[in-house]
Amino acid sequence: MDFDQRLRLHYDSLSDNEKEMVKFIQSHAAEVADSSITDLGAKMLSSKSSVLRLSKKLGFRGYSELKFILKQSLASDNFEPADLVAELQNDIQRTLQYVRQTNFQLLLDKMKEADTLVLYATGFSQSNATKEFANDLFISGRTNFLIAGESNLKIISNKLTSQDLVIVTSLSGNTHGIRDAIKTLKISNVPLCSVTSFGTNYLTEHADYSLYYEAGLLPNVNGQEPIYSMTCLNLILSILSRKYKEFILFDE
Image (tube, rainbow, N blue to C red):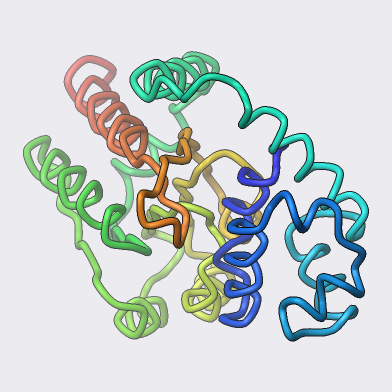
């Protein structure tokens, strides 16, 4: 797993200061790859312990491993400019390959049987995709409630039971603001389905059902926060809605 993939998995768990440190590392990657941990701490107006803590939060065993992976990432960046259409095709193929290997039956059963189906998205792009998903389910006769805002999720999490189902769509699955609501859902034995990019994360660790999609990193002309393609989130949700339609039309 390269540096950007690790960053994608753990970005939402970083503090604001750590996100600023990541920006420095990304914009000075070659310099960082040849810097000692003490020198890097000084360059970022931080400390050796802060750099080590950031390394571990990104999933590295230490700063030495971060530098090693960063050097590998730099080496791969020296090849020809990326073919973004080909990368999108690869993302779609990997997501479809995952779909072919996944049994949706238990989730489809629960979606049909749930007294209340709640949908929640952790970001703007996720929300757009989830709105389309909610509409598709309505067309198939599956009433659902699309919840917006962390506070609203907390409120409704106290009112649900084991006869309901919550589906949460996310990029990293590590959004800090919904953790209390997720804990409440688990205490009340409310079934939870996570829909996240590939990788282990907080949501999948607490979910009864998990679906995954590929979220490729896109070039950012502004050179600031990483941008990910959410095309495959739309794809996996579209597949789930179609499988649900097939289930209620042909499998009953």
